Image (tube, rainbow, N blue to C red; front, side, top):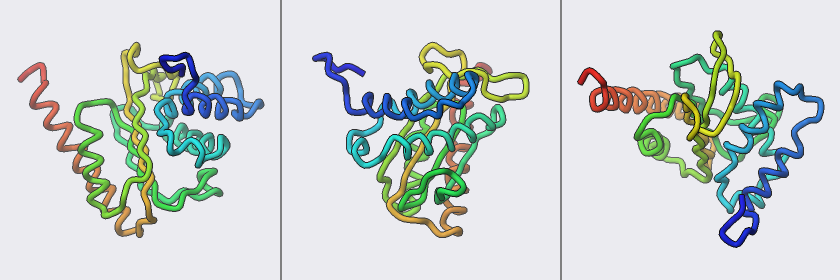
Amino acid sequence: MAGPTGATSPASSVVDRVVAVIPADQSDEQRALMEPFVRMYLRRLPDVDVAALTPEQLLAEVSDLLVVFDERPVGRDVVRVFRPRIEDCGYTTSGSVVQVVTDDRPFLVDSIGIAVTGSGATIVRHLHPLIGTSRDAEGRLASVQKARSAARRESVQHFELDRALSPEDSAALEAAIRSEERRVGKECRSRWSPYH
């Protein structure tokens, strides 16, 4: 991403380095999903994260999330509160991770952010890309494109926390996020329903 002076931003240079480490043995079909997903997911990576994470670590994070994103049932929200481990996810973090994948709608960032901070943990990294998608008849991901030009937009939120949550705290946070999603969905339907 070039800035006003034509200089490349640190985030775009990291994105290019992550794209460069996508395995060469991926099929054309896999790469057609992975590369644009990497670019959209990391597009607004905070500068503070640029030096702290290697391209391989970021690719592992994105790859793990893309599997969840691809398998998400149409119209169903996915909420994950977990501690990534190398053997399961391909990467690890010092604290827990919260990921939410849902159809895009208003108020999600604030309401989910409030639920996450209500856990008592501090958010050390938050990414929230909107991703344009098309899905096949079975609901699997067929293509990824810029959200602005897409008929369907899906919201991804990734929170990295400053500490590992206990299994009980993780379950409580997941329940709190799902409760907020239901509340936001109900509010959106009541405000913007075509039948209202």
